[in-house]
Length: 128
Image (tube, rainbow, N blue to C red; front, side):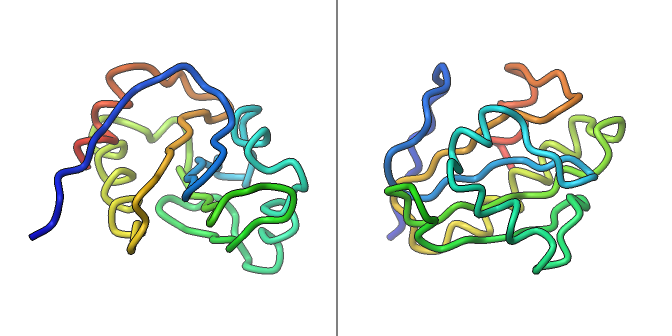
């Protein structure tokens, strides 16, 4: 039997363990909070290698990212900020949920350049 997830919303501080999911805008841009999770800029180096542009639901995964104690750092493409409605946030949550694998400790950083992310968007993403 699978266990129920425990979801908590908190003020940001860079995660210290587990898997971390960050959002990337359509041009591959990361917000300040996402950058704080990746001090060695491993995602910025991985984006061109993986041909990642921030396209909606696209993924780039870095295992054991340099300069962090994290297991995984995953960028999830959010696509065009103007296209992020309730349904899109729900689909992003589903994309993240499908990528969890065996992770037991997961943080999702809701910081996206140009987007106004609040409780409604967080709830939609969590429901996905």
